Length: 228
Image (cartoon, rainbow, N blue to C red; front, side):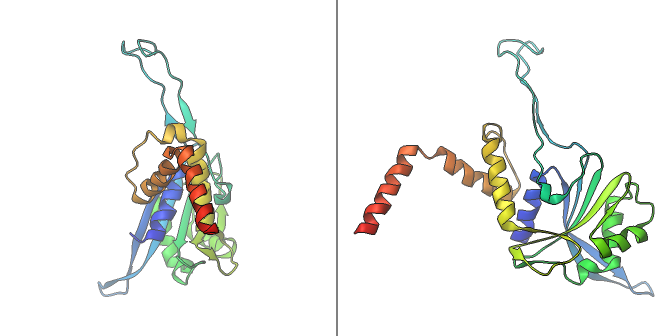
């Protein structure tokens, strides 16, 4: 997987989205012929009030008490407001990911590509895909009673302005580091199989696990080396 797509996927996972990455779009051109048209970097879906629930410990007797006592459940439901996800409806997100400028290329604006993305996730109250696509191309978002659909561009820096949400990888990394630090007591005990997320957690673990004295002595050595 492209590293930029992997980072965007890890960020969306941390925001409680289910994702499909590098989804291939195949087009028909008549007489039984087909060919690859493009791929969609990320299609993501978030359900209302989604979060990571950490259940309380169940005692040895099978009840809520027991030798180890009763633990309280914890909910981690942090959500980056930049994503514009509603709390009461499904959020469908169609994203393009670039290592350079955060912008949509021609394929990301192709009505046929958008239609393929919408069919991949189902209707969710979107009675007319054509109507939804018209709104996406004009405003970058479409709202219904049951769902919100958004177009998003990820990149290292901002590109052209357009009718879509832009998110830089600088913001992604800052948000994920803040999330890890605020919930470190819980997250340090989790095992993440996603490569990008695992790497980010390893970076945070090295920061938390390093003794304060080691950091201070390191600063002292750097100061002496600069004076030398």
